[in-house]
Image (tube, rainbow, N blue to C red):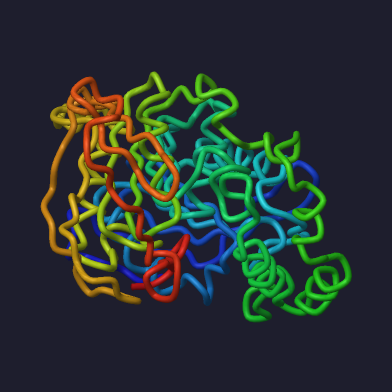
Amino acid sequence: MRYVSELPYATKEEEHVVIPMSDGVRLSARIWRPTASDREPVPAVLEYIPYRKRDLTSVRDSVHHPYIAGHGYACVRVDVRGTGESEGVLKDEYLEREQADAEEVLAWLAEQPWCDGATGMMGLSWGAFAALQVAARRPPSLRAIAIASFTDDRHHDDMHYMGGAMLSDNLAEAGTMFAYATCPPDPAVVGDRWRDMWRERLENTDPWVLEWLRHQRRDDYWRHASVSENYQDVRCPVLASSGWADGYSNAVTRLLGNLDVPRKGLIGPWSHKFPHLGEPGPAIGYLQEVVRWWDHWLKGVDNGVMDGPMLRTWMQDSVPPSTSYEERPGRWVAEPTWPSPHIHPVTYPLTRHRIEPPGPDGAGDAGEAMTVRSPLSVGQFAGKWASYNA
C-alpha cells in the first residue's frame, strides 16, 4: 500500500480487490480510502469503466482518486466485466448485465465496514454514461453523481447516428473497443488463470459495429439506457459538465432543462477530458468542485454548493480556425436557470442561396438579404464531432 499525507486525510491504496457478482463472475477493483476509515466509515465514490485500471487509465486514476480519498472518501475504480482483471467477456456497451453489475458493486460497497452506506458515482465518457444510466435505476445507496462528457440519448446524440446520420466514429470506436475487450488480464494479479481468461475473451468477442449497423434507426436497442426516454427516472442530484470542443456538450443543457432534481451544469472550452485536465485551456479546479459536491450530498455539509447559477459556461471569443488550440480566449458567463430567461428566439427564414434577416417582429422580411457562404464545411475549417485531444 502507498500512503499520501499532504491532504486532510492520510490514505491507503489497495491495488486489487475482488468484488463477487451474483452469477459467480468476479470484478476487479482498485481502492483508495482514508486510513482512518478502518475505524470511521466514509462514503464511497465509484468510477466504473472498461479502460483497464492497471495500464490504460492508471496514471489518470492516480491523480484524482487519491485527491478525493484524501478529502474523506473511499474511491473505487472498477473495471467493467470482461476488461482488465475483471472476469467474463465484454460484448457491447451499456448492456443490462453491465448496469446490473454496477448495482451489485454499489450494494457491496455500501456494506463494507469502511463505508458509511452512502455512495456516489463519477466519470468521464463511458464512466459518465454508466453513472447516469445507473442513477436512472435508483440503487438505494446512490446519493449523487458527477458526470463529464456524456449523453442522455444513445442514438441521436452519440458517436453512432448523431442526428440520424452515421458517424465515422461508429467504426473507429468499434475498432478501439475490440482491441480493449480482447486484451489479456495481468498475470501478476490473476495468476495462472490469465491465459484461460484471455482465451475466453478472444473466442467470444465480435466487433460491436456489426450490432450497431443492424440498428440504424432509433429502436429498443438504442432506447435502452437512454435516459432521455424518461428523465423522471433520475432521482439523485447531478453535477454535469462537458466542453465546446467535445462531441457531448448538448446533453448538459438537456439535463438541466428536463431533470427535476438538484442539478448544476458546467461547459468549458475543453475537448473530451476531465475539466481539471481540460484542453484547450483554461482548465479549472474540477476536483475541488467535485469534493464540494460530495461533501454536500454524501456527507450533508452545508457548504452552499447549490447557491448561485444553475449553469456556468465559457463564452469563447472568435479565433481563426485551427486543428488545435492551447487556450481558447473568452470569459465565464452564467445562467440562473435553464432554459435561460435571457434567451429569446429569432427566426431567420431560408430562401434560395441566402438567409433572410429578421424583421421587427423577428420573423424575417426586413430588407437586404444575407448571402450564404460556407467555407466551414471543408478541411480544417470543418472541425470534428468529438476531439479526444487538444
